[in-house]
Image (tube, rainbow, N blue to C red):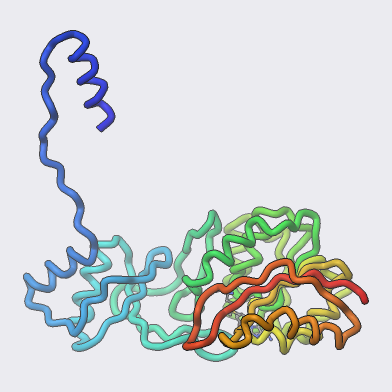
Length: 300
Ligand SMILES: C[S@@+](CC[C@H](N)C(=O)[O-])C[C@H]1O[C@@H](n2cnc3c(N)ncnc32)[C@H](O)[C@@H]1O
């Protein structure tokens, strides 16, 4: 593309005629168009052909319906078009406190994948571990949350959604993770090694309410919608002046109330707090929002 103007300028200056390159170039059709074409040509009847998918490393997640043989063919066509090995059908939401996905492997070998996001390699099995595409900005923001030389506690670390970006980009003294799901804890350990931060990440395998520590933490992260239930524990582990990053569910009518409600709650423990930031992450149900709030905790 860049050569045409240069050639033209050179030709204009020299007074010689120039020839435009009119070679037709093919524009690659989208995977959706390719799969639609494949389905039409092969008379594959699908109830509704998905036009969107979620990609994690070498796997994609799709909404598929109807005849299972047709689903497999469509899944295979998507895999070839996108260039992945495995295709999962999304069968439901995320289950239980350990946040397990409801997926069915429709095509390919399945198993462990490595998903690259924001320079971090997350190793996990999409069929067994949730990874929320809607929280990408939250994971990315952890990359620049100031934590150099700090002690960080991640009370619901999962596979390291927040811990790995902090450990990799912020040079903290260490990141103490708590994770109740043994499989997630295993993937976290693996991802820490793959990202070269296993010397910074420490893992407590169990309920964060039973975690005890000789330290107070500069930063406490609570990536759990029920984080207010874990408030007491978090407050007992944070040092005065420390930051608490909490994720909570807030109904539309309470959005304007967040600061007052949190302050009232914190005051019960003879502490005070200032809100450094509070923002909506995403809508999760009619009239409910996933909100992230960062507080600076101090003694009263
Ligand atoms: C909602 S997931 C984290 C999702 C993540 N924020 C994301 O961006 O995708 C919360 C994690 O906390 C773990 N968990 C739940 N209750 C826990 C507890 N009491 N102690 C430690 N971990 C817990 C779950 O197993 C899960 O891995």
